[in-house]
Image (cartoon, rainbow, N blue to C red):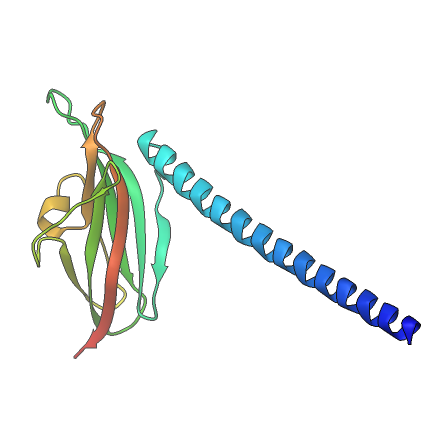
Length: 172
């Protein structure tokens, strides 16, 4: 009887120890993932503040009918006192049909979310079959295929750019 109680007690201790070890592993994993997420956010923010954007088109969204790319542009005009930096957007229709795509920009400057009117950040693009359309320093305000980052050497900077609610549809 004494041996049975001793074995049962040892099993409980081993089982309890295994549960504690599992709890430690789960806690360690959670803390590690949280730290990695915070580190990633800090890296993104510091990269944006340094102006280290991609100067070439980078695929950001690959949908069934369209691909959406972004790139950085220094839109300095010689002889003018302002030097805007812009993130440009390019949309490519991958189909042999006419396509309509729209989304909203979610923006933040210096980690503050920018509140805007209902349609202020709405982007709408109609594309002919296999057509590509892109923003440029000269047209990004009219076609909304670009977002102002900052004026060069200015403190305030775009720290959040998300294309929200992207929808695409085939047009007849």
